[in-house]
Length: 436
Ligand code: NAD
Image 1 (tube, helix red, strand yellow):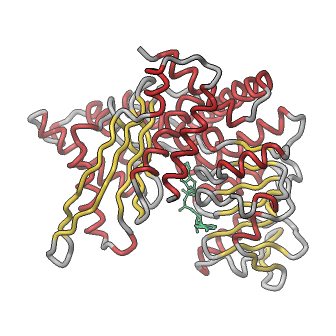
Image 2 (cartoon, rainbow, N blue to C red; image 1 turned 90 degrees about the vertical axis):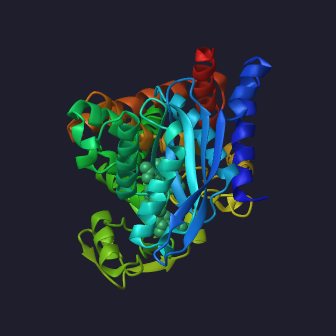
């Protein structure tokens, strides 16, 4: 079975489990399982060679009971309809679980963006918007970046959207007043700041994860000081998680990227800003054994991505790919808490096994929702033609995360279920209460 199908089965079986005691009508249950619309289409792109190449693309609009569909667009050669549908389903749950007035959607293009030129990438991004124009927009469906899509790509997409909308309204982008332009730019989030993006968006997912972990620790009467944390994936999410957790006193023992991981031999905490500086300089983490303001080539060791998951630590934070904790390694996990920052890093079997073993899993729909929360704040700023300070954005993010955690925690205690089941239950109850 492919990974996309596995993700979809797992999302749907969690939906079924969470609704088992809810006495939903068959109509409601069906609406939660089946997406509202699946757009599967081709994008013809003029390549630099002069030939036209056609790319398969998807946008799955899962449920808009609470508000416009919301979710990223990924560019990857392994994108498939099942995966996009699974991720769209999880977006409906995520938005609802953290109290956003948004529904769930997801998009993807089957492409290896690394082999396209910049011009080809731009034509592909604009093509996606041309094909989907009728079905997206600030009041309908608001895409965002995801794997291999950046603020630059959102910029091309929103520019294309504004052009098409201006034509549809018999005007031009140049003739628009600022409030209308700002509103129309609300059709995409994760944009560059000068195109209506929000301050704080870059750090938001990592920041939200740290707030979720801190909230859990507080509920258990503990704090972040001296907590030994291991992080798989030192990209945007992993880096900011590591940085902000270490600022709160946590010890980041090991980090890794696609080429492998590092740790200091004596397990002293890594100096995260220095490790990032070193990685940027060298292009790899190997040798970036930095602690307490200095990097020492002889102080550390390289570890594999498989090894990093099974290190003895308090907290394991997978920030890279889905399904990395699975049947093959679940019995070797030694951390007591797992914070799911990637989407679906723990498979269904591994979840059941670890849950029974008493390992706490802070689920992805809560832990990595900081990104969509600040996307929501960006959208709100666009709709009202405002620009908020970073301080205000971070404050609103904290408020949202802490409130969501409190509700999910409460339900998990009251029903004696895992945080994941509780998050699904909270989310589904909210959606079905608004279904007409
Ligand atoms: P990114 O591309 O910036 O970073 C990914 C990191 O993972 C890179 O350092 C890469 O080298 C590393 N990596 C890739 N394969 C690996 C492997 N096999 N083992 C270890 N590391 C590996 O991506 P990101 O934005 O940080 O997103 C990371 C994850 O978080 C993804 O699953 C994404 O879907 C999820 N997520 C991201 C956001 C967001 O706002 N960026 C929001 C929600 C969820």
